[in-house]
Length: 528
Image (cartoon, rainbow, N blue to C red; front, side, top):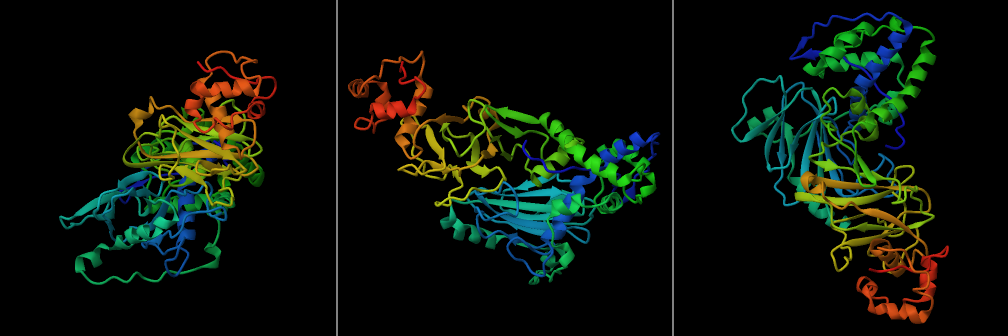
């Protein structure tokens, strides 16, 4: 879990339009007060961040790429590239269509298109919990759970417990040439109020509004808020976006510092040097949240990912806050896994000053309609600039496979002679994210996870990279220093199993290559 740059908080309760009757606990010391304030911040942070993100994303008069008024489509039109800096670790497999819903007045009708590719609409409530994933063509009513009314038989009701909701539709594509097909899918999507749908009238979305003060980076905006502004914002948001019944216990505790729906936060509950204590609290939350996240970290070989209950957090408030910082709008593990690695097979940090072989014994295991990819990011969590504008390899990349169906990918800053299986990684530190959409969780238990092995030699020599990989995969006994001592013996090796895995090496397999691949006295390898 890398660079988690921030911290979190707050809550109290309201359900079905009725305020919870909360018996406030008392806090007996200054230390207890600030401990409770910290719990409140962690609790409420995702809610406040969602609202800040909604405010920024809907700060426009008309829909445009990256912006749209509430209850209108925000269609993505291009894949991210190295110049894209809007969000960290951008996805280059899918085009996004987003909607920020306001369900306070009436349900919104969403028509999901018929398509033969991965196209799923994830619906989240105001607390960042996934309430539904829509992947079948049909007509859906996105409805606040307290709404009472009848729907036509052909409309499927999707209940959301909060007035604010966020939908993220991900449509997979095979590179930029496939964009027109994605646009055609987007054109089939429809969004309109229930009343208009029932009337059959043509719908013209209303004009939004723009305010300069709402043009900001959401995470920075939230972190800049003082205690009174933050907690009163949280309290107000909780009135239309009530906490769940499972939160009753923490709400009772937070009521002691005036945090909860229909409450007004009063700075008089704070003790000591408020500004210094607030700053110290925020700075101290980072390691606490990172440690909390480790409880939910799952290993896939040298890779790790956030596991359940990601995307549907229940009462795991610190985990919910951590994930909000790391990536707002996370899917549940049934929909997607995001394994990450920053190190090679020997545990050394990945760097573009070295070259590596990424070996996939077999593709990640996905269910029908799923897909996978592996994307490289720099230490700043953005895509790495390169001449090919290639940022990932995936199941649509047309990779060259070995005879046994496995795949070897070169990770290097310099291009090999054949770039088909090359993933550029720049010249600085980097890390990899694997994306596995609709994973086969049972099959993944026995899946051989991709390995990353450093090799010595020219990154432009794809043959050298493959030879090194075969050395690392097929060595079953101690290398013989004399086995490859001359060109004569190297050529002799063309008849053994080595050549079966390197069919293009008969004329190129020389001692010069061997010596470059195996320095420090290790000049050969044994093939059983």
